[in-house]
Length: 368
Image (tube, rainbow, N blue to C red; front, top):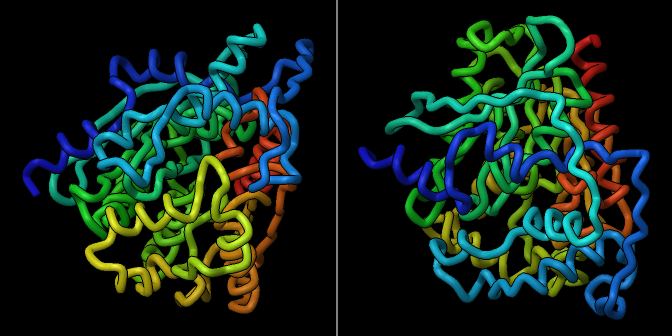
């Protein structure tokens, strides 16, 4: 485990310079400039895998395809991390249509923090307005526990920081196949504990902490709440789970209906399972198969779903399981959009709405 730090940081698929520069390049797609209205029209026909897709979403997917990436499931993990990302597609769409990059309203700094087996990197987004101490949101990015990084998901962190007025701590974590399950889960919780102990060192209020995650990160965020409960530690005040990985059923209604969807497909999910888990049998572990976990006593929850997404069914099922466990839960499905839409607020209207909803719920939990 001695090489954990290097493997965590080197798994990013964008080169690191300074964290501020990274955010400037990748993560300002957070708040749409209301004075600049651009009509985005797809050039191709409606895809067979997503007949309800919204025009703006289709434009992003068409751009992603045009960037020439190879099917993730045909690659090694190292190769997959170098492929074009949905964020690259959003940036290319904005450039092509002369859409202005909104001015960032949060400052950023990077920091390496101690975790099990070494160190990992976090990026701290701090509002330029408001008064310290700020509430803190611990954010976990997606990528199937194998690909992507805090750069790829920077738009989500920037958008949430600007709209909530809270500090965002975006957590990098080790990925498979170099670091198998449950290493990402362990480090995710280590980062949460670090935030609890060190919030005052970056102007945060340790009494007001929430967790947010997308896809694999949604799974990690829920697990952080579960671990905090089980270890009788301070729990998050709220959790936002955006199209979380929550089940091991790859024959669910949405898996079958959207098996060939983009940017996430059924073959990709099978590839993620193969790369992160030691064996497929581990997918039954309640840390992966959250719908079978003990969910009692968890924080109030918002689950955001995307219609054109293999994970749609399990997100809805998780919301039902949480409600059955007497957890106050809201579920919101966004029609016509795909997995990964949440961070695309400069281009996709539904992303702007979803970020606004999440921010409203988080501010309420913080008493703001």
